[in-house]
Amino acid sequence: MARTKKEDSGEGKKIVVQNRKARHDYDIVDRIETGIVLQGTEVKSLRAGKVNLKDSYALVEGREVFLHRVHIGAYEGGTYYNHEPERTRKLLLHGVEIRRLAGRTQQQGLTLVPLSIYFLKGRAKIELGVAKGKKQYDKRNALAERQAQREVQRALKDRNR
Image 1: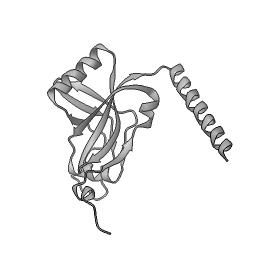
Image 2: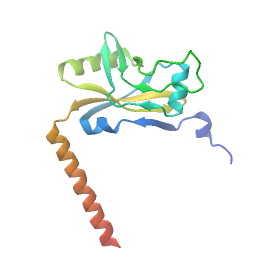
Image 3: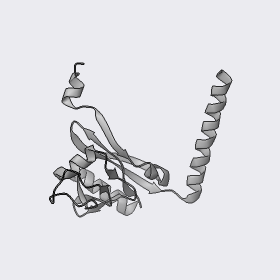
Image 4: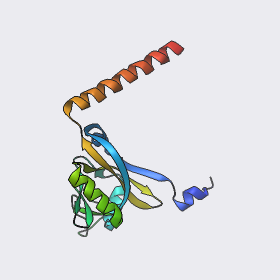
C-alpha cells in the first residue's frame, strides 16, 4: 500500500499519553501547546509509550517553565547513558507566553497541568492546561452529570431499537 503525503511529512498527531485524572481534578481554563527538551533515550521511551503524567505539574521559574514529576521510563536498549526517569524537564515557550503564564499562576491562583504528550511532525509536544482546582462537591456534581447523560443516551438507544 502506498503512503500518503500526510504520512510522509509526519503531520499526523500521534498521542502518546493523556492525563485523564487532571481533567477530573481540575477545571481547564486554557490550553497551550509547548515543546519539551528531551534526551535521546527519553524520545525512544516516549515512542514506546513508557510515560506517566500522574501528579505532574509545571512551574514558571524565572524566565523559564519546567515540567516536574513526569515519569518517563528507562529505555530498554539504553546503556549507562540512559536518562533519569523523573528528572525536571524544560518546556519551550516564547517569552511573551511565559510572562502571561507567570502572571496568571501567581495572581489568579491557577496552576499548570500537563494534559497530554504527543508527537506532531516528528517532534514531542506537551499540551499544558491552565487549570483551577475543583472542590470535592464539584467532582461529585460532574460525575452525577456524566452518569445522567449516559442514562439518557442508553434510553434513547433502547427506544430506537
